[in-house]
Length: 190
Image (cartoon, rainbow, N blue to C red; front, side):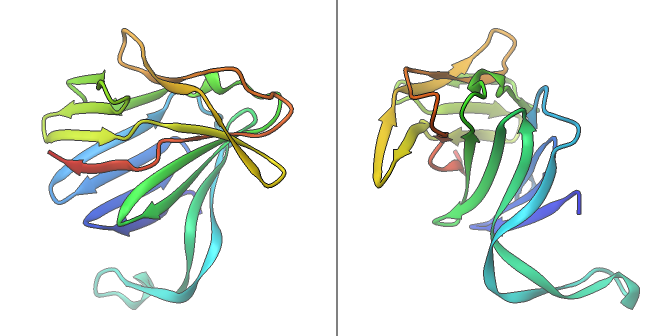
């Protein structure tokens, strides 16, 4: 399928290759991946126990029974050499960008819509002001695995003058995968 759904903690997410459409009650925010590859695909990862049933409307032809559940959704090929994994953490949507060796993390460009303003907070988190309220992404944690060791990489959000968000990445070993993990995405409306 070209679209996946996730729910948790009152937040609903519709995941498509070009972005994530978020809804919390009547509040909405779109996360658009600017310049992403048109051939990106969305799929499940980490099969969860049980199955889901969807009864959409009165027509049995619209009902879906026994739909497999997954622990996460993954956008493969979001950018050249970069995948996105979306999981749930404490009822909140969490994202991880996985950058393979040789790929450039500078390709990641995110647009939040509709956003009146996007700004960095003093704690490194991202504040997205919209007509519906304030959304937040916690400061990203960047790391690499070297065997059994996890090595932290310096990094932060970068907000361009046009409101697009990317990541500043410090020195890292380009022969190993790099994970950019904003820890908890869209933790709450304030």
